[in-house]
Amino acid sequence: MSDLCDRIWRGARVLTLVQGLPRLGAVEDALIASRDGRIVYVGPAEQAPALEAPEIIDCEDRWITPGLIDPHTHLVFAGDRAGEFEHRLSGVSYEAIARSGGGIVSTMRDTRAASQDELTACALPRLDALLAEGLTTIEIKSGYGLTLKDELKSLRAARALGKARKVTVTTTLLAAHALPPEFADNSDAYVDVVCREIIPAVAAEGLADAVDAFCETIAFTPAQVRRVFDAARAHGLPVKLHAEQLSNSRGAVLAAEFCALSADHLEHLDDEGVAAMAHAGTVAVLLPGAYYTMRETTLPPIAALRAHAVPIALATDCNPGTSPLTSLLLTMNMAATLFRLTVDECLAGVTREAARALGRLPDVGTLEAGKRCDLAIWNIERPAELVYRLGFNPLQARVWNGEIA
Image 1 (cartoon, one colour):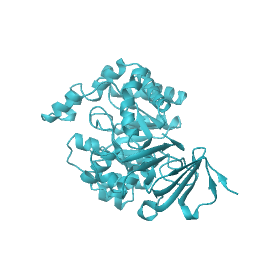
Image 2 (spheres, one colour):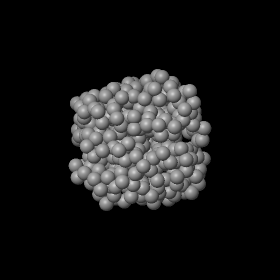
Image 3 (cartoon, rainbow, N blue to C red):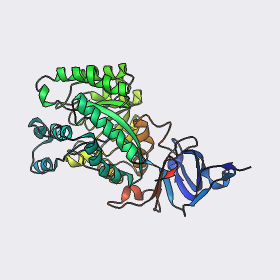
Image 4 (spheres, one colour):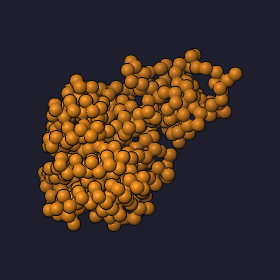
């Protein structure tokens, strides 16, 4: 007797991305079957059990990967910072722009002035650009409101995006992103607000899946971040950290101490930080878009991350100032070209390891029976094309939760 499914994809070549398998778990002449949004079977067609479905799709030898995952974005914001881009081209540093009232604080002013509906509407074109390249899961941070009211507004806008489109949205509270002007020269008082007011309120409404902070000379000290992480832990929220982007503040060591899901950026990460992340299982999320936009010259310690088997994820870091990037395909090419990651590392970085960085690997990121049926179907001859091409989108179809989206 045949097992009834909702949908079957046959005649495909599949990269399952299952850990430890050669060639990213590649399967020729593969079949994928789904029921109720979950994968029932994925593997060689000749080994499949008896399956039936009202819809059977012939993939005509196309490649299928897990749906792409962007584990670090600041997608919800108002306004732009094209003027700052021009200033940087003329030689003004990011730090100088930030200290003069630009940078994150500039976006804060525009974001505070926008309504929740306006923030959602502004973010939709950015989200749609990512969806068009096979995205099925995205992390969206707050951090441009920097008051309780405006951080809540930003997180609600992010959640609204997940209702407006067929995509899984995970939200991260990043209230410790920058020091708002009303707390100038009193950063400890603002951290008090984050810990005692913003985190409890966000947790009470269930609006965030994690808490993030910016540990840097132009942002918050390790001691202040520790307070934020303690408050997150007290409210049952996992943490992640912007660490070692502009200097080595030992943020990665602190993140590892709290078993953070990820530490992100990491251009100035040292051996101690790498070892701490490896011990804690903290994922390294690399952001080549920011590296490129800011014309950085210090590379993340790729060899050390590999030597310690630290998982490496990739993300767009989509934001208005330092990475106005809405393409995971271009992100992979940048990671390969600038950071010398391999094709396999890039593909794993926007699927399996990106899921791991969000704490979602049990559910998404690889193609296995029981996991969500999130797929990207590609018009390519070989997987390397997804990393190799520039400005070319070979997506044939996107499948989210078992539905063709």
